[in-house]
Length: 154
Image 1: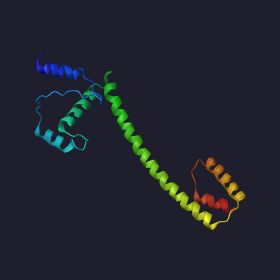
Image 2 (image 1 turned 90 degrees about the horizontal axis):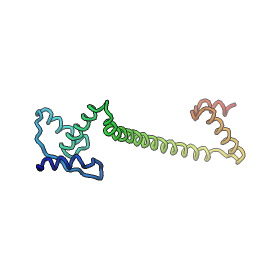
Image 3 (image 1 turned 180 degrees about the horizontal axis):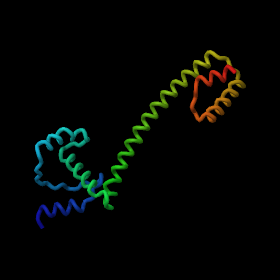
Image 4 (image 1 turned 120 degrees about the vertical axis):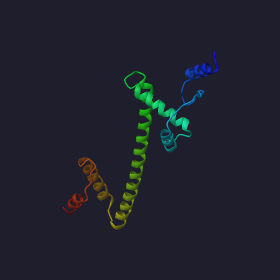
């Protein structure tokens, strides 16, 4: 068996998982200079450390595109969907966490400010908390300052 056939057999038998590193096969490729310029411009923006990695990712992507109506698509598409979904969830989680933190700070400031200027006894405070809890449930959490002012004046 020739050296190339042995390397091809090893590459075919090796699983392409993060924990297993399959041997690579070296071969000649001819591409247009414009294509190489595009690769030079884009490979780092795709978080690829080498142009080879970029080209391999492009080939895998195109192969997945060609296999879209075949059962082998699962092998291509499942990791793509997982990666995309993970990125969306993490981005949303960070934005929500920042927004909730900012809201908590504002509510804390308002609470301390109101506590400093009002002298409420425990009974009035309990009744106010109960009324506000019922109101928030009733209005589904959408608080309107104008309606709160009207309610306090009445």
